[in-house]
Length: 70
Image (cartoon, rainbow, N blue to C red):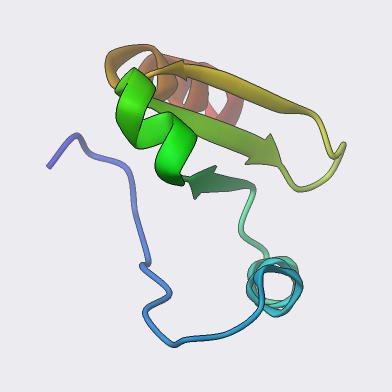
């Protein structure tokens, strides 16, 4: 909807397996939405190349990704 190519991992699997899959297919960022993020109305973004992770509001996440991939 915001112009960012997205894939949702829907299978029940351990978190590590999900990150390994994202790394294997070359995903630059993983959005993590757990209980804490839902309560805060935020998204945690993990940069797969650096391992850096930040938690930001949804609108800021979109801007951050766009800046980094352009």
